[in-house]
Image (cartoon, rainbow, N blue to C red; front, side, top):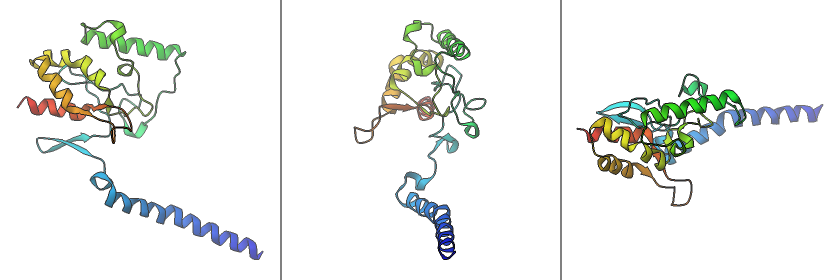
Length: 190
């Protein structure tokens, strides 16, 4: 009986420690060492917050770069973050990807079907991916330039400046944050 009470006390102490103090320690560490004091990085345009830079958003107009499709809720719903869990042999999934390719080609008639990047027609695992590869951005340059009345060189230069390199040159891959890229486009038109 004495051992049982001791075990219960230790269990209770660990529950309190890991559910309160451990989280508090992580929060304090983020406040000191984390970017933006551990809070989400927000993106602003004209002094107004237009979104969180670490969560994808829906862009459908030709004047903007598009991100990856989302399977989270009705699209980019952070409360429903999840992939579709449909595999590459699921006919419904294949039909959905085919429809996305067809839509992409309608807006990018200068591309062949084989030139459509796979990530532009398949959703990420979270459904909230804010980034695309530089290749996906470059594929859209012509459409965005035509829609904005800019030259392809002007838009390509904005993409070039928006490419984020791997951490320490080693960890991760090159990426482009779609929200930040679209904000840079808006700021260049002023």
